[in-house]
Length: 334
Image (tube, rainbow, N blue to C red; front, top):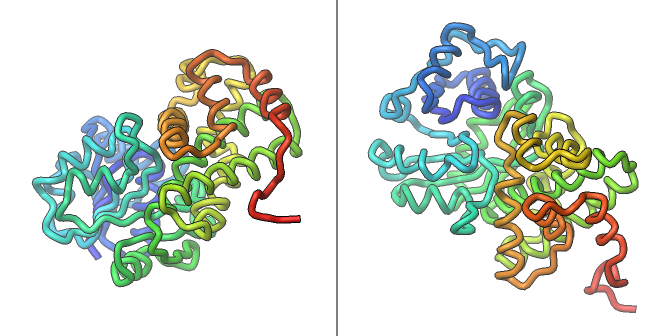
């Protein structure tokens, strides 16, 4: 296939390398001409994917029309704060029924919309799908075995995308639950910030396991209230992505959380990580959604207090431990 990847950061280039290895003709676009010039010259993105060579047959461009012309699939791999502006720029060049695969993870703060919703808003004539799961760019780019899930409006589209991405090192499942897949991928970044904060405070594995488990309880409660399917949250794009993001140093959210746990401010941590920390942008949206759908999310609440109201991470953990006593699963009866 002819496939375009919009976004030349680590995840965009990781996907481009995967698709190129699958035999597709791949075009990578960046909104930054300087970035394209650097990639053409060095054939490596030293900041995002140091040591990973970009083959000469991956075409690089900063011309969006050229990138989208005659492509079977367009992959949106820009950071979540830039999805709306990118989609708006894409609109004039998108044909009716164009398959667009979103791989960005986040919730727009002011509208509380998911990334697929945003693309549908801006490009209503497109066929928008989602690819998500435990998939660090640093590992996908190096061909380390990875498994993801693709969500689409119809089965044929999901299987078409599945066939394009599937390889001996990248296994893809299909699902009709676009909303659930998106929410799992977005909200896990907020929990990963909390897990990183616990690491920064030098707490142990017990604390990490508790945050992952109770974080998934929060994510699934909200997700089901919004219309997502419970099975999705206990699949690759839910618990799978949550585990990898909370545990790996590839995770920019965990790294930022570690710094905040050590006493950095939110702004200082983001500058130190030097990449977009998606969880910071999703935290306010997650808190707003919890209020809108009347869902209790104590970890998300405390993360917001730490990020935006200066609460000490150590005090937030203490509050979580000393909350009112309750049962683990309200659906279970004695």
